[in-house]
Image (tube, rainbow, N blue to C red; front, side):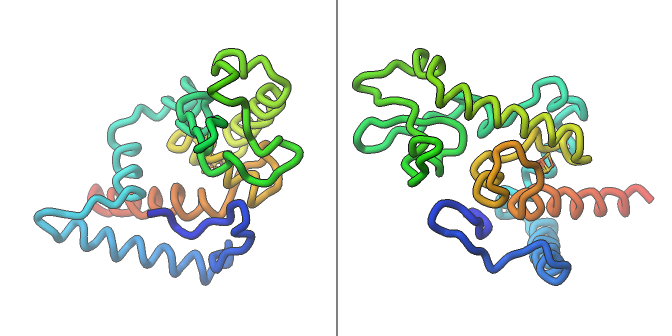
Length: 190
Ligand code: SF4
């Protein structure tokens, strides 16, 4: 389940960067985390489990060395629609009505190879912008070591640019869960 996001035709969200909205979401995650800790067979909650895994298992310099995530690294995900059109990066982008990025369709499996698609102008422009977004995240965001530069679809639909950095999605799905787990760890080691 994803937390509500601005994407494609869903152009508005009831969530925002307002302090009151942030507090509500933080309180929701905190209660979920309390329930997880109290339960013998806890539910898997992706955002909290990811935050724990990143804090406890991934070296701090992992993303600085490797630089990318599944969604901002080409062909880690390949999305194919019912007509054979294919795309990569964030799966939600495939087929979205967007002239500038040709509906985010890199080719069709009946005519185009995945390898040859990366020689096309659309891939080069798109990949270059995503790379710049990762670079900007690394320069500006203290959470980069745990995140790797975020989700292209959210950057594009929230900020109108793949080169941008912070989104509501990363605030709620990456930063807030990390803060909650970190503060519990700090309490435990005081
Ligand atoms: S948390 Fe957001 S701003 Fe920070 S690196 Fe990730 S996508 Fe970029």
